[in-house]
Length: 288
Image (cartoon, rainbow, N blue to C red; front, side):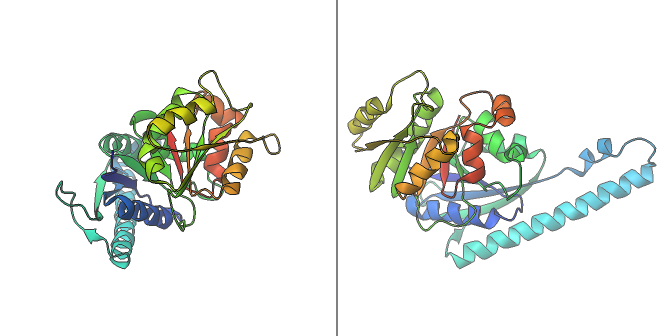
């Protein structure tokens, strides 16, 4: 299945430009459409946060100030989008079934980001989200968790810096779970066009389910030759060992399942998903 539509939530973070550049790179590879979406905060949501003891006039001023700030941020993000599209020679147009070249469009809507992003992700082949900013807790990424938990679609976490390539050398992090199987299925179009594919596994990462050689045999039925490599935790971190193994392969895409345990447990105890989200310097495709 070709990748025809990408969703790109833009919030104005410092890594938003790298995410936009990554999405446009994917669009060039597949001749797809990038649907950039900025969700503005509803100023009416400010009122319940104002607390007691404030007059109606004060609450009204807070709502007006919030609206002005939201409009200014939306304008700044739209300007960044227009500049990038022009610099990269991408046609600004709405998606069309007959159009096979890379195109991009921008929309700004008002509402709750986690709700609207998850809903729009359900009608996109892939959602590209920015890497968490330095020092930002991954649990604060509403767009990322909305796609992972409430869209049924894969998400591509862009690196902090625009990669030189994507999808030429792919690593699959395999542990036999339903989540890793979903990641393989989402990555299959990429695997079939990649120059090299490697399956990464580790005793500490494996769960109940098929092991790496069985996955390699399955992929061969789809015309994908994948070699096998095992890795060990680094500094007792399975995720760190996984990333080192991906760098050793010179991978430019890592496909993996997300949150085999509950999200709450992962956020409290750490976990492979959390480590990769915080430390990966290559594009990572995740499925839940």
